[in-house]
Amino acid sequence: MLYFFLSYARGDEDALVQRLYEDLSAEVRLIAGLPRDERVGFVDRTILLGERWPQRLVEALST
Image: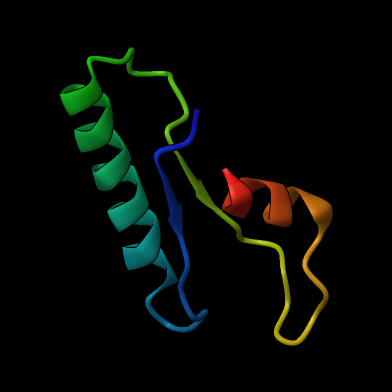
């Protein structure tokens, strides 16, 4: 089960976005009592500006 979907604008701060995702994931796992390797969030790094969203993004957002 995914607990969050991280949406962001690509730019110079991509490393900070990745850090936010990792830190948030760790906190969610801790609060939910989940193992360290459990995937709890979704962030996409492949979609380009104006591109149609792949089905996996639609599915991730809908959960």
